[in-house]
Image 1: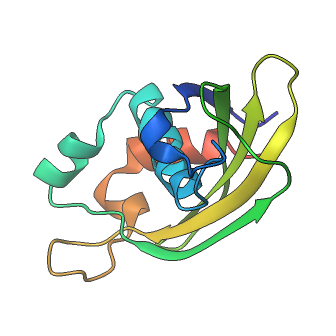
Image 2: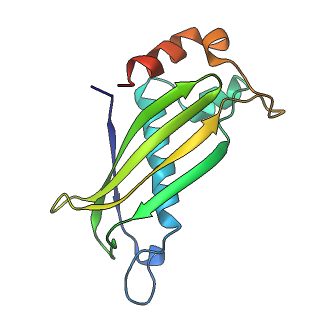
Image 3: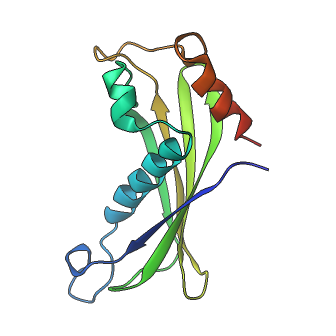
Length: 139
């Protein structure tokens, strides 16, 4: 069973339009919250990775909107890692409303492990323990 990390957010007024429906780009922000929490659950923070000279720039992103989130909804972002292949890492996300577990959006982001010069980094060689923790959390 893959490792799933759950993050909670409450929709703020500033994240909505006049109809109190969440503006679509906010889901990408919530994806970032999910993957930051996922990395933290592995026992390392994004800032620690950056201090070690490793960045995770986004290569691709996809989000499918299913139902609107609205002002003051409490949401959960369920984050998993679906693939670690070479220098690429793919996170999958599901955004659900807490009160009824309704799926609102789902998607993925693909990243590359890179140096501060944006050159690819082989995580298996550079940080074998972190590599193993990520691999162990994939189906």
